[in-house]
Structure formats: C-alpha cells, structure tokens
Image 1: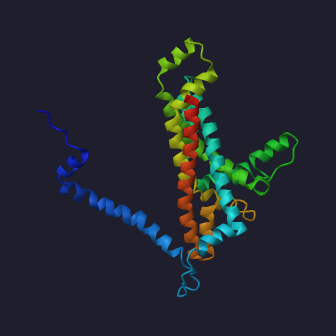
Image 2: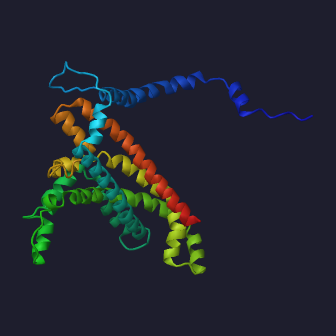
Length: 304
C-alpha cells in the first residue's frame, strides 16, 4: 500500500519553532532595524513637512510638496542629471578599463605580483586625498602635471576643473574605482577552466569569439557584482566633489549627496533634504535594477 508523501505545507506545520535560535538572532535583528530602518522611516516622516531649523517650532505638514519641488525645479532636475551622468560614466569606464587590466593581469609576465599591488593602491586612497592629489598635483593649470605636459607640447595649459568640471570628477572617481572592478573581473577570469579555452582554440575559435561566447558569459556574475556595488557606492560620492569643486562652477558638479549636504547643513532645510534622501534610496534601487537587467539581456543574447 502506497503512502502519500507529505506536502511542503504539512512539513512546515510539523517543524517546531526553535526558540533558542530565535532568541539568538533577535538582538541582531533589533539592532539592524534600529540602525537602518528607523532612520529611514524618520527621514520619510520629515520629508512630508516644511521644516527649517532656523524656525524650529514652525513645522507645517505639506504632503508631497518637497518631492514635487525636486521634480519641478529646473536646478533640482539638473542635480539629478549630474548624478546619473556621474554614475553611468564611472560604471562604464571602470568596467571597460578594469576589464582590460584584468585580461592583462590574468596573463603570466615578470613582475605581475608587483603590478597588481601597485594597481590596487589607488582604491585604498581616501576620497578627499584623491581629490587633493588630482586638484593640486595633476590638474592645477600652473604647476600641475597635465599643465607641464601641455607646455612641453607647446599647447596652452587647461584649467580642467573650471572648463571640464564633470569630466574631471568622473576621471577622479574612475581612477579610484577601476582597481575594484579589475579585481572582481580578474577573480572571474581565474575561475574559467583553461582546458575549455584551449579546446576552443584548437577548434579554430578567434580571440574575439573566445571573448564574446566564452569569457563574457562566464563573467556575467562578476559584472553583476561590479555594477551593483559600484552603483550603490557611487551614489554616495561626496568627498571628491566637496574637496575639488564644491559642487561648482554653479551646480555643474552638484549631485544628490552634495545637494543633501547643502540643504541640510548650509540652508537647514530638513524637509527638502529628507525628501532628497528618500529619493536617493529609491533612485539607487531603480538604477541598479535597470542596469542589471540590461546586462542580463545582453549576455543572454550572446549565449543564444
């Protein structure tokens, strides 16, 4: 006589609750909620009020007016555009440059260990130090390295931070984050079985076909990690902008994090700063999801 197998629902009902495990996890869960979710809930709460710390007792409820201001004011829209340009530019450049460097470091050559160590050093530099080095030692129009090269070539020196402010910030942040992308992609490359590549070469596979049909699909998970983590961290870029350009000239390099700083600590507009903070969280999740779907579709197309 055959006995019917228990369904997953019946199995779950039979499992007793592990009280000891719940009690062990509970403090960490409470700590996580208090330190992450509670501040976010308070930020959402303040975003519905018109609250300026210069008049602390006057805090009228204004609903979605702070959010509408972010989407209707031309300057605020420009700040959001700056944020998108910075994030997408750095993500694309770090993947391209980091991928090329990872392909190079994946090959055997004399001094490879030293090259790897020197290459990751820029990722260990603090953002403020990065901005000081680029602003004073590289991009200074009088005694910077780039100005010296221009003089040697008989060309006029360029004040990059004034004439090309956003491109300068993108260059700084890209220099800082390229080692991160290269290390993640190098890890993915080293997990690729060498015998599969040798078999493909024996079958007449060209280097371009090898990269497109074998290496790129194999690196899909590594690319997802790079895009996801860089998108989250690049949304928080603040030190380079504060030190190098202070958001200027005008608002040409003002991004959402620097905008939040200006509204909260320069203008004491807590309501608008809170709305921008909530928008930053939603924006980060949205951009990450869109980029990951685009990468997934492209890689699936390459595999087809």
